[in-house]
Image (cartoon, rainbow, N blue to C red):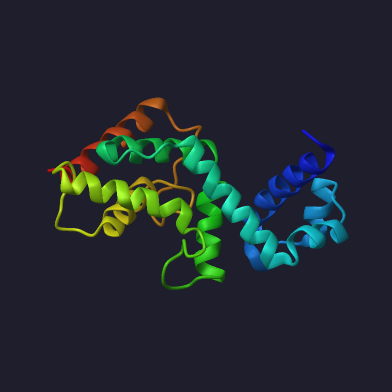
Amino acid sequence: MRDGDASRRRLLDAAAAEFAEHGFAGARVDRIAASSGVNKQQMYAWHGSKDGLFDAVFDDQLQHIVDVVPFDADDLPGYAVRLYDSYLREPELIRLTSWNRLERVPTGDLLRGHRHLADPKLEAIAAAQAAGRVVADLRPAEVYSMVIALAGTWSPVSGTLAASAADDDAEHDRRREALRLTVRRALVP
């Protein structure tokens, strides 16, 4: 990895941690610069503004989840469970998503500007619906939203109970099975 690429990676990782912890408004560019070892002038040259940096971090985190948790419209229950597990391992995306919703995109499509990541999933759901493998009386975007919401039931931003990687394995297994069963009953004919 070239020095510039390594610096960009350090910057995105440091900014992801800062934004996930403090939100957009609470994040401090000085802390991101200090943590990443990238000076603010270079940060602004690459991303233009704190907004641009957040957008780059959010896109990077969304791409990461796509790479780490492959989507399979023919196995929505399994996808939901894999998302649950990813939220335990790497809670930054779910936190960033919540901050983005609270501070930047309070209504409407949270993934606007990131359609390149969502549209293939919606197309796959539509194809599974046409083949009778996913309920057809919901829009693909509704199916996708419900799977995401169910997967986040015990996420770090849950309003009822936030799971931790330190929770007992039997409890995680019980939650995974409940999630798998619920998604299957709701969305698989």
